[in-house]
Amino acid sequence: NAGVTQTPKFRVLKTGQSMTLLCAQDMNHEYMYWYRQDPGMGLRLIHYSVGEGTTAKGEVPDGYNVSRLKKQNFLLGLESAAPSQTSVYFCASTTDTNQETQYFGPGTRLLVL
Amino acid sequence: GQSLEQPSEVTAVEGAIVQINCTYQTSGFYGLSWYQQHDGGAPTFLSYNALDGLEETGRFSSFLSRSDSYGYLLLQELQMKDSASYFCAQNTYNFNKFYFGSGTKLNVKP
Image (cartoon, rainbow over all chains, first blue to last red; front, side, top):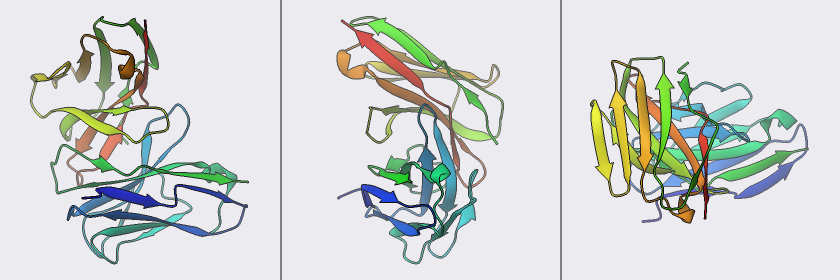
């Protein structure tokens, strides 16, 4: 099993450009999450999904959109990137409600100039 | 949202014992978990408390007291490789959303 994978690993964007981050998991997990982590801070939840075809907003959803067309994939989109979106983005998955462990991907480092 | 407070940085020597505290305000959660994150890496799961008391996993133990809104991670026999950031997190009744503390950077010195 590959676990949780993320592509790309690193990206540089100019202000106003768009991009999509891909998260894939091969553990048949129902729940998937997108977080951002800024220097010296914990992880903040952007959006999450409790199953194929469903998405919901987290703590900091503005400027991002998501889609979960297939159970194994969770996409995070930036329609018009801003310097404030420079961050490290982590995807995570878990099996169901009240599951203690989240499994994280390796992260995507995004720099918006 | 949830608010979990941790010390920002802790320094200890190799072989020692260190305790990292986590205090929180919200009571509606399934459990309190702890994650380790090395610089440039992803968070990895260490320990979880659904009930009050102590959970032991090798050199790491975690404790929860719901009545005191408090938990801690205890690391024993510290090794240099334990130098990392440690995060506490709650998974909430609301679709198992996880809320993380801001993290504690542990520096282990020889």
